[in-house]
Image 1 (cartoon, rainbow, N blue to C red):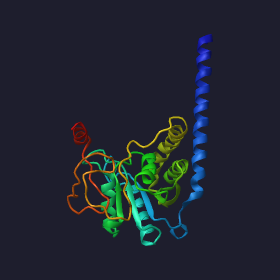
Image 2 (image 1 turned 135 degrees about the horizontal axis):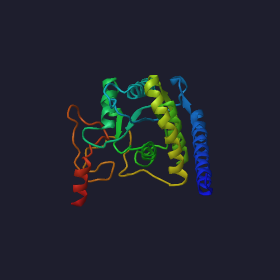
Image 3 (image 1 turned 45 degrees about the vertical axis):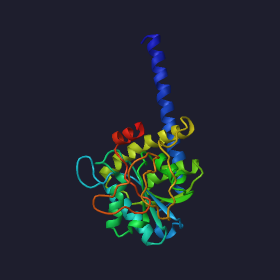
Length: 258
């Protein structure tokens, strides 16, 4: 082995070791947030709002996403137990065909939650976006996060960094097959979370006009993203207070150009 090859090998080992240390630290730092999460609904402290973090209703290969189902069940349990008065569903709204908040809202209504108790955040592209927008757009400085335990830990870690007094209600974990793949992704998501907060200093992609949860808001041509666009009813049901449908990115760009 040449001298240059040895130097390359040493550099590679140092990089690999540093990456491993960062992964371990990220796992430890974020998992400390578990002290703010609950499995028993009776022990969850009251908060005005529950924030349900988005995921697709269906799996890529077909079939129902159990993460989605258990989050809906957990949010319904919180509401029916009197632990929250309102539910804010936050997720990706990338296209008219893929709309996590709309899927969650419809599932909650089907589960018996009143439509006027559900608010939608269509710009929850990442967990960081959902947490910060809940405070900056929807005016909530303390709330209950609803997701699986490992996701709640990361969400609360982010929330506390931004001065949000969040707690988490843990939805049931899905099957082992779905769970293993997601847990592997979560390890790297925690590392990226540390980089976003302490190195890249990232914030949400969009903020926008404030929405006061609990106060009826008439349909108006201004979404929570701050884009000038029409407020349209859902195809099969009326909009609840505070809910507005976003235009697809192409239409939004055209609106801004005007």
